[in-house]
Length: 158
Image (cartoon, rainbow, N blue to C red; front, side, top):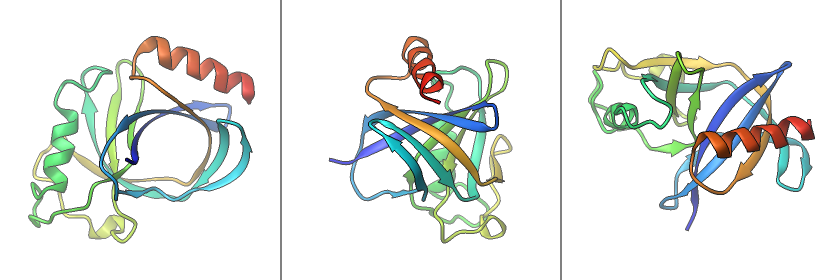
């Protein structure tokens, strides 16, 4: 069984931190491409190209406000083209307590200009710029304690 990654971006001193918590899912999803620049056990420094995403605001950090389903409806045809778009990994969650977002990475074959317009006004299509990110994968669910401990370990490694 493959894993689907939930990645949380945190900007620190020009290098993003990427905390990856996992949940089991079905095999066969396209993942965002990256190049490993440095590897040290569970820690990695990765370069990502620009990525096209569809994103939505979230009311709370646990994602229980329907954000995931808004994004899922978009890729299953709730868009102006009624186009179905393949599910990909990871699912990005970013921002602060007052500005949280969740985003799906769109398949590489769909460039930003070719993405159908969302019918839900809460969704936005945009391109994330290329960047370098420090990554640490950890087991367990997404909660403040796991995130805090993992970010501290990642910052210490950097």
